[in-house]
Image (tube, rainbow, N blue to C red; front, side, top):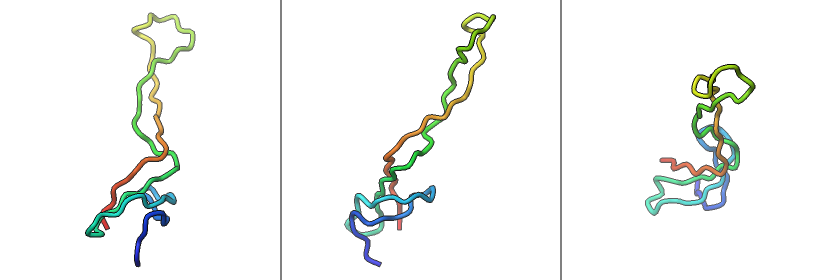
Length: 75
């Protein structure tokens, strides 16, 4: 199957993505996915009213998401 820039292809997480680059030897492609992908987990202080001091407030883990992530895929 001949792949072209602009064709749709599945990203590693199973979403529909578009091909944005194809290597000269046609062994690797780059796809851009418009869906949300988990970037990393951040620890943030829980700012609800607390009787504890600022340094002892509990923290929550929150996920940070990114859109339009580009994946490099070997084919």
